[in-house]
Image 1: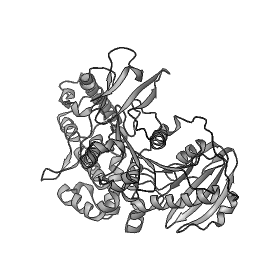
Image 2: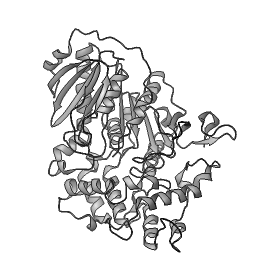
Image 3: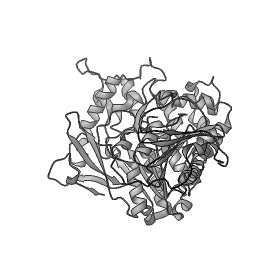
Length: 499
């Protein structure tokens, strides 16, 4: 799944950092005794250009970095890196991955040292791109590491290295993860409630076994083949998106190209059905039926919803998510072949009543971060900030709002004192978003933890093609941004959050 790296680089303000007070030098950490971990290298990196190793799924990256100490270590089968900046702000940031990705997230480690954080990232015990689960075949130990243990282990080791290098423990620790990393974030809150003071979980694939099952069903709804009659072209999906926006944009009484709440949209794709050859990128009857099915949830024969349908307004990113050979099909098929059945399993045989319960019996307790029980996290004073794109065609928004409703049901009026969900209209997962999505989750969660003031809104930005900037308030669910009726609709000051 595509990581939301860009949002982290929006706010790189100048900060006042602490100077390391410990006598240890970076090279001394090469012999540090870290419980359960082995330090394989500790290298001083001078300020200037730093080129990362070549990695599956990321290649090699070059950054202009401040001086930092780079510590490489192994924990079980997982490889982790901890970056310790010379100008330290006294805090630690843990970083999540995406999809089935097995790689160090160097782009996010760069963000941590630039903003003064000590940062830690793990490959979660394997090396692979985000759509490949072949590493997991007959390896329950690796699936456990991927599920939860590698994230916790890297955190424990990072705190020990911070203590050894700076001579003091981090004053605050934060975790950021998006997509599968958002699942890691919720797993930390649920399983290891004292690892982090604040957790930012964005577009979380929290019910992993159901998410992957939903992806298989989506591919079958489109005929299960790139040459199937039901399959759409990217041009058809974009034409569909324009029609959906035209039909539902004004439901919030403001036509701005964004659908504020897709659940209020009731568009019928029959409007694009080919009646004659005049309509460009029209849909035939089979494609209309397939699109209708994509908007509907995956259900068992009992009627129980396994995974919600795609949201109206997400069509602009179907080309990188649900259409044939896009992300959803390869990762879900690979997951079922390598973690549930075997590499010869044919996804055309998928039966929700058989395969979903079986997958759950194997891996729900290891991979799913869907428990609303946050008692220990709340008692420890932890803060949970969730965010979800309303146009997400990979981690669909209703699954995230359903989870938050369960949390709200458990904690009632106390919920927003420690857990808030912010919805992002016009933001998806892999396509270029029409809505504003640039904001800094770590700044937001750190502000909440360190001031004790929960965010009533978060301002997100988007730079348009003409160089102008659009800003909007992201509102705590279930509130939505409402135009005040006057002023520039590209300026967040002219909106308020209201139910």
